[in-house]
Image (tube, rainbow, N blue to C red; front, side):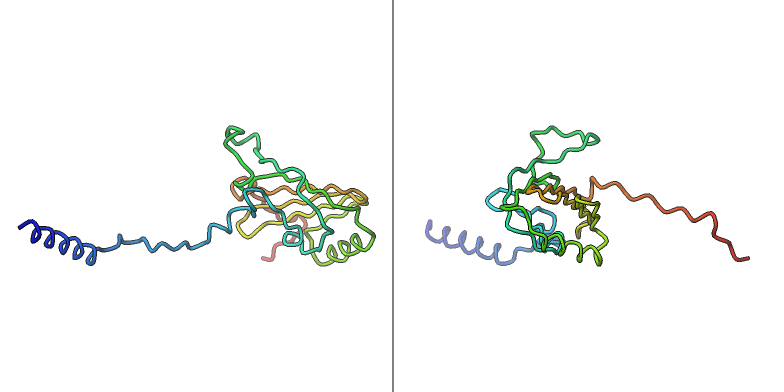
Length: 172
């Protein structure tokens, strides 16, 4: 009798699992991969690819320091924010001071890429990423230090709209 009861119970369990239905709306697929929103990390450490950001090949460099960026307008405890959230300032250190060919390459890139701003020996590159966040890369000529800041879309202030020029004549 016990054996028959066990067989019936096992058959009922198998049948109920076989006819189970998935909950509607759960296809277990993201419309956008989570990796698009997360900064590049390796073993929990932030990695910054300057060539990916600026499309210019930089000399060899290493990460010196990365700190989370917390603006005054956001009420977060400093210990709750990490660089993995995507809001960070990173200090990179070039292995050597770049030669003149590097700065010439940036000058050529700046002719085609309006994200570059070159002011004597100060170089700045600022652009939006795919998700609406902003990258800002700054460094000085004859220096080994590069500062990279990234802000997620939520922390980026919207650009003010351009006002029409006062001199423009309206056609009637």
